[in-house]
Length: 158
Length: 377
Image (cartoon, rainbow over all chains, first blue to last red):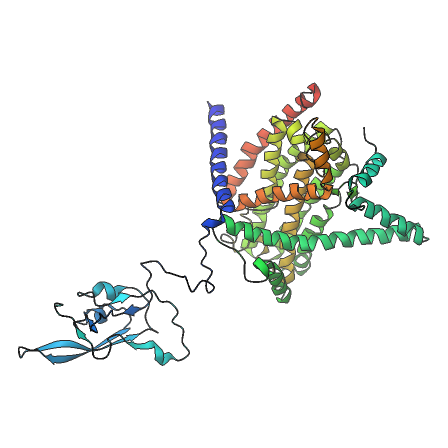
């Protein structure tokens, strides 16, 4: 009984070792499987994966309209005060005053790309872009305004 | 039965495209020195110096190549590229690392035993280089063909343990000491299996001399001639030697993730480079011994009585045969490192004392019976 267990252990372990060696041998002989991105040589064809969190942007459509209502949910959700919303009171066509976004200040130098602002936004106004080359020589270039000049909110968004 | 003189004669007929071989260069140098210098002692001294220098000149680029090979092999097995920026395909990376180590400050801790601390890397490197003496790199091309070649290899490589224990003790660092003690226990235990594997070939050959062992494989390598027992011996030898040279998966003594760096934690600069050098030289030696004893050394691959095939195989220079066999085993040992998880120290010792040693002992018995009854090819 002991001998059976003994030789059984040896047989099973040798077999598992050989399975491992076959896998690494396969990887060694198939260089097509290599996952390394040879950056910066491949900048022309580089495409990041879909869930990549680059920087926060506010998509605008062809009519220069965005979906931001100025609710400041992203400013509250941000853990380190990267987003600062400046709102204004806009006069509606039916006479009432409604809060609208004036400036969406985004400090890229503080952003941790944690995605909490995107999740918090109730109207899907902001998304994470796929850019990652943010290095600049002048820090003032990192304080961005996300809503384009002359843009207003889209029709139909709350 | 081929006499040594007969073999020299055969060499100069075989290398038809190059009228020189390593052996003829060595004999030519010896003759030139004996003729041009009056004192025989001085001639021998100069010849020995040249042989030592040639060995050193071979070893350092070898270690560079092995370091590069290790990193590239590791990378390809891990589906990545490895060094590819410094030099063409990353070949100068190791040179860059060596230059970096040269520039580093070789720190000696204040409370350490300074004499032992500085002596330890020297012992480890010197014992590794000493074992290069009986290895036959090509036909008739050995530094020293002594009559107890195999015993010399086994015993001199054991002296390396002293260097490791010295390094661990004199560092004045409890983690280094722990690493060194574990390494000492590991090396001493696995030497038994290595010794018994070597003995199985010695039994079949009847001689400890390296050149005799290689010549006995003229009609076929021992791994083919002595079928199952010698194959088991070969597997045990490769596994136990990987443990002997403190390489993964048996590298708990110097595991980077476990004990910072084990016995060589406190070493920096050139002293650290000595430990690295010794590790790669040991790797080469262990593979060379496996290639010599089990795979036929510099003997070409002959199949029975296929005369034309054997004749074609003879055209490949013997040094190329030896180096390709050695690098094959080095590749297998490197694959071990990047395939298997590290063994815990109790698992390591269990493997040796409960599995490898009993199997080796039974295997020696089988090989003895095989040798006596003539049941090998």
